[in-house]
Length: 308
Image 1 (cartoon, rainbow, N blue to C red):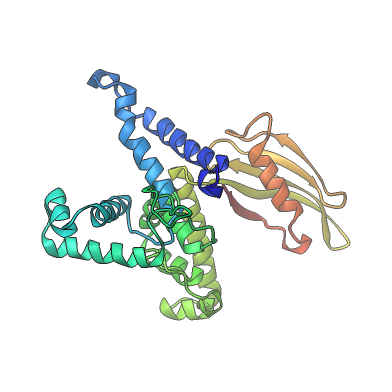
Image 2: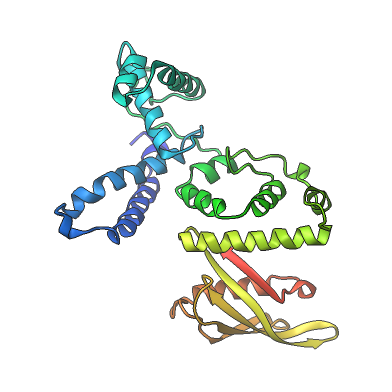
């Protein structure tokens, strides 16, 4: 009861939801004919879901879930055996040099934060539940449960698309390092990198790369997206007073239609798009909120809006 947010019910609910998501995803792959009960089949995937959630709470980054498991294993051996390097080498059937490297990682982490919570007397409780409450964009991106989906989607882009996104967004998709936003290259500088391109050409290529990555992330189930196309508009005093937009949910299915009255800040769903929810109109609502908040002179003719 005195553990603060370590035992917060919202945190446990987040873990539970992560496990539930994994159970629903793996249910599609489950084959009863193979003889294993579902509880037996799903167990390792539930364990991995909990570990992925735990990764997101750490102060330090790892390249993969497999690497994270090995680091945790070395950490346990470091605290509970006399010869962690040899024990690790035996467990993973690896050479001593690799085991030494993992020991260096563990020692480095141990210097950043304790692996174990201590009680009022300064004695370790034996429970690895240390948390980091600070917001760190790199950790959120790379240690989040969606990181594997992001990496898979990014790898499907071609070299030019990957380079444009990494440079313009000031992030390395290999190591997760986020650079200073103010130092990111301009579209003029990006154009120089790809000879024969202009600044406007580089910007168009970047926008296309963003849309392509969005579509890939939608296919991975990492995000949702609503695609918008302006069908018609009515102008008064050089401003768009009303417009009708077509919208598509998650880049698939038949398009729906939305009528917008910008003068009075009102909107109406004329036709529901495929996959949109009848009760909440989730995709239409996102589209309406985006368009009503746009500056009138910057209302798009065509755009894709992503959301979680």
